Image 1 (cartoon, helix red, strand yellow):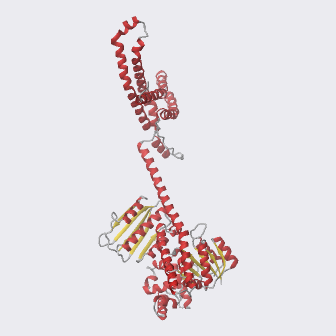
Image 2 (cartoon, rainbow over the protein chains, first blue to last red):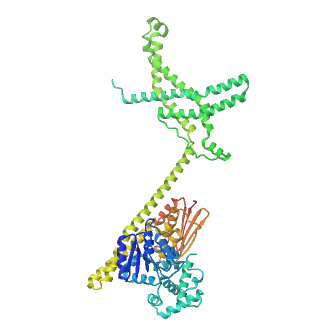
Image 3 (cartoon, rainbow over the protein chains, first blue to last red):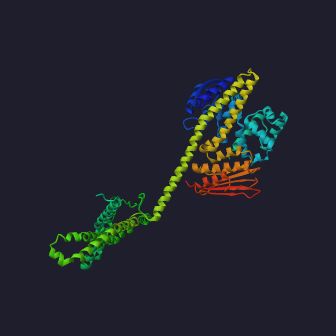
Length: 216
Length: 415
């Protein structure tokens, strides 16, 4: 799988390349700013773009804007944002259109190489990878509307769903059985009034509803 | 013969002061011909309409010139700067703006100074000069009399009676002269400062305005410095630490064949690097949260609330972003209040409300902790009170023992 990296710190860029290569990616191009990134994506049409949020020249949210531009111009390109701090607003901006093929992680998660590679793979395969810190922020304002009806355990399950975990992953994280997770998820669907269609689609809808409400 | 320094200084100062007084006579009398002409012409012809308008025009024209002459005289001859009115920006002519102009410049004070006070001051100056001349004449009278033929000297003045008395009187006056000239010059300078310059209230107002501007500049400079440090740490040290942690992580992932104790050392280094990153994160965020600058108060507060280890109910009601320094003070008030609630008050939950009411940003943080927080004793709260005070805001802590604790801040945020 081909990947493009945008990160202005050369030191970290070298580390990221090594980590991605370890995860079976082939780094097609590397860029130090948003413009270089867009050019590289246009040229290589990669299967993953790994982007630092804060980049020259403004050192604010160039990466987020570049990621949204990539999603607009080449829909379906999996994008992972890396940031020193995760702030839900960036995630909400990015995820408001589509939750598939999107990741938003803290930079220091890269240090846990195996977990990081797994998260990036999930995104490259069309999944989601949200940092637990983002999810915590997203859960913060859920004290009204349908979310208020969720039990704490159901909220935890929804949070892990938003992080992009599978049922098995959620079961492992919460130390419960997979069938218990499935039961919680069905309760969530019921409480959020999500129609009974195929389960995967409803998962995405639940996460979207969850993210959408964060913007209110 | 050497002249003692003190005496020399007195003589020089007296010369300077009398010179200053002498230079004042003509400009102070400059408007006398105008009103004298007006008075006599009116008396002769009875055409007061003409004389009043002509003399008023002359006075109005002459006032700025005379004021400039007087300013130069004060500055050059005795080194006193008569303060100027700060020029106000030209605005469109309306009754209100004219009234404002009159209220701030008060031209009648200047006119009064030149027209009425000027002649009186000229009289005073002439009086001092006359005294000076008289005392000089008296001092040299005795010596001068020796130049006269003996007969006149004996017949007119007497030898030992009148002339020595003149000389003694002259000497006495001469001793008083420096003081008199100095007092007269000072009195004039004070009058001129009061009448030609801005009033005391205006000067204070200007000073207050200056201080307000310099305080704002100072606060902005401090904020800019915090941002610079944050940026340096974020783009330098933090990146290096992350890179170090990544490399250690890679070492562990790629070399599972390493001996057990080497692996353990790397694992410990890896852990410590990650902890250092977390600590540095907290420090940097405490300096100036980057998201506050990028996305504003609401976004920064949701991040803060999520990191706070207790459940926080957050309500932010803002129509638009407020000034950066208001945002940053509001953020630090909330951040400090939440950390107090967590660390000191053993609170179970907290509530943050941020609301803009007119031109005031109201911030309220309530927790259900132990209470007993004292804004006077706690350095954290006292520091917050100062930061709020720097924006002319109001800061209040209500914390009865047993709780709940409520911290409120009201920050002016007119744009």
